Length: 90
Image (tube, rainbow, N blue to C red; front, top):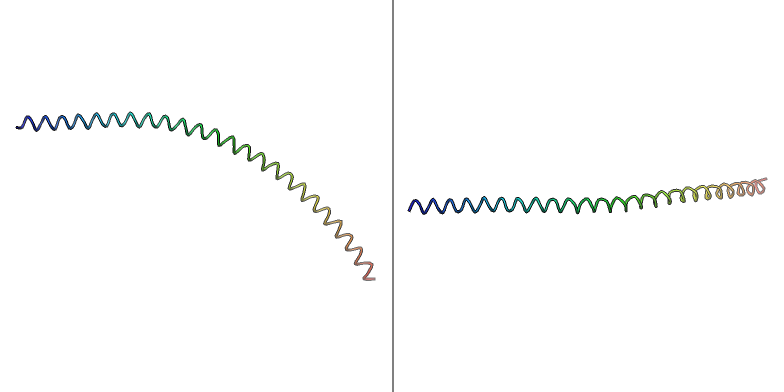
């Protein structure tokens, strides 16, 4: 009876150890696969971010130019208003 118990314990231990090795190798292969996918995603997102950054820089330049034009128009209108007010104030 003792031999049967020890045989069952040995069989259980061998099964558990082999399952651990199997799951460990599966996790290693999954980790390598996942690492490759993450690297590919990083490259794709990096390219998209660089494209968006260029577009934002372009828009920033256009907004600065628009601000300069609007400032010039406001200055011209302000000058015209000052001239008009001076005519009527005198």
